[in-house]
Image (cartoon, rainbow, N blue to C red; front, side, top):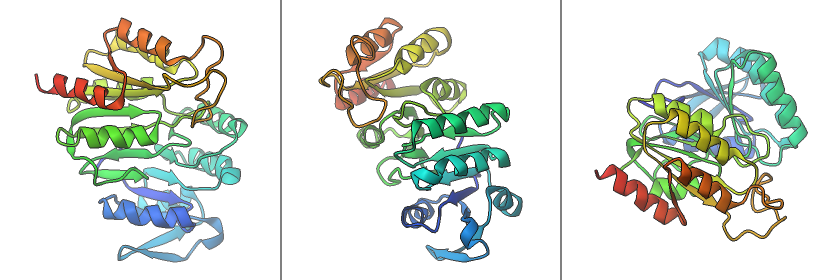
Length: 294
């Protein structure tokens, strides 16, 4: 079993005809993802050949869903057009919209996410500024390398794309049920808590790795959720122990202001509820390896 993305998922790519969309559509197909078409209103009616498959280009997400039965969209749309692309996916009520784009203005993300709420949260948004979702051996939607891990029984949720890849690789011999990159922007759709809830409910996920970073209070809120709701073992890592105060580190949301949002404070909150926290990604992988060997 996998979380949110399975072998039955039918994926469309918003922005499939752009350079990034073209490149990663081919990579997703090579990974076994069932990509069924793309969306570009200016190129509707055309056909794109990728990895030997003829992929139709539709004028809208709603049209693509009606013609193909698509239930997942991956958005490779430039920042200035991303708000409208996400709102279009929400209006079409596609169940899952994964927004890869980096550099979307926070105001635009806020407007789009508020629209999702107003429409009844029928579309789960993952991202923006995220690597996507991978269920090894089943489907891969986004930019996560498909050949760095194997199917298994660990669930992974991470703010960082790079650390997602590292953790998948370090635990490749044990393997993962689903790996979810939620993105590091100040305003995101799916949170650590959403992923923790899904992994807790998944009978084929035995343990969870949660990767956070400095800035905000998402990890502290996740710790409170774990204490109240999660019975499966969780190990964690918080990036940014050496980050200087007031400087953005990598992600737009990764900034420490005063005593708020420090890595040490997040580590303490997680350890207080029984989460084992590594000081490095490799140590975190070792902690999970100990749990899975029992």
